[in-house]
Length: 190
Length: 143
Image (cartoon, rainbow over all chains, first blue to last red; front, side, top):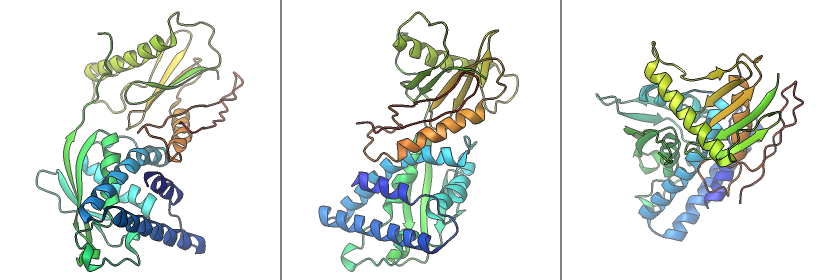
């Protein structure tokens, strides 16, 4: 499952200007993700468990995707969480999903923010049936963000606050900065 | 431009790759010890530079040189460290090292069965006559 999705995501990286084959790729991506979630639902039969699996798979993708992102975007280390959020919304989302969420709803302490997605390529053509009301369909994205940021020494908590699939007007991802992870010297002779 | 050798370390200090082209003198210790020495030295020198810097630090430690060779250092935000020893004629290898990183990290992502979080490279073969740097990298799956 993880293997399939990593290959999936790598295959559909970098959305350029639309043309017929790009639209085809975009739909293929959406449909393949849908097939993945459907299979997980069959395998686990429990929405909470599927949400957890999606998060875990996303995490595994994120820890690898960050290297690809850094290689392609040539972006250096961000100075603070605000800069990080901007890079995620304007560069990373654009590069991998072709959308640019807006960064809003900063907490007063500056450690929590919302990413508002006007559209979400993962959920084109998707409707949630009534018996899956607690399924967080795009939870893979939360895992990806968490995994990628962990590899650049930031521990974050990411979850969906609003979801158009569950009747809300917009899709909102809430990201909370937990702590900066310190660099450790590997255990040596000293 | 002459490239003497190249080290690539992951964020935990393990040496992912070592390549040698034009090294006239060995260190006199085992390769394992040499990698530990290199990584430890870099950790210390970066910490030193950041502590002793008279100005606010931007990029931190970049290179050092002796009368014979120059060591170039490049670190990504994910802790991948690339070190290249060259002759003294190379002013700034940052772009080259970034290019090496780009080429190499693509291999990591496209390998879906790779189990470790950091890209695991099995073979990088460089074709480089000593006077020019032309890199050809080949990746193989780690399993």
